[in-house]
Image 1 (cartoon, rainbow, N blue to C red):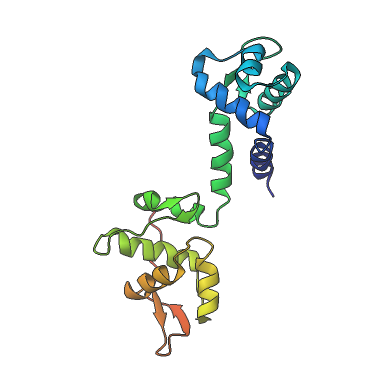
Image 2: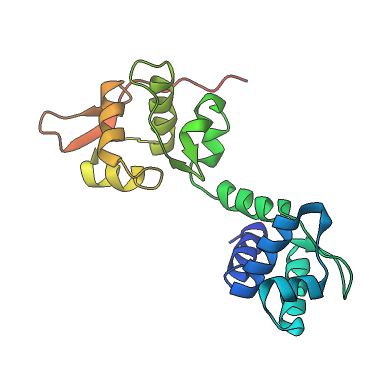
Length: 188
């Protein structure tokens, strides 16, 4: 695991603590006005030391600014940075960068929606997924399903779309798949 991924995992794991999560949410809610430790302790119905510990951890994680009895403010971009680091670890992330018109169909490295059937994005999605599969020969259906499951929950629908758009070929029995049309070389 990369250092960036380990840091993202630590940020997300630290927010599993109820007091830290509540403190972060309250600081986000208060925006630029922020809150003192006593404000947070009162708002969250926590003893002052617990509110102080939560804030100290949030500051250490880069999710808040402030010190001691001063004013604390949320730094939500720290959470966005952690989420972006996790996104970059997704297996399709590097390929998706070359298909900006398909970004709205993905969330956190997962295909969340297929483009309309007659859209020019449908063959592009097939091309992106063909690059992702990187087939060099024949594969059985289980292997294709396993690979596609890394990026979609609708494995059968995506596999069918790839066959329909020519990016994947299937034998007559429907059990063996291979690469379809040649994948164009990247421009640039």
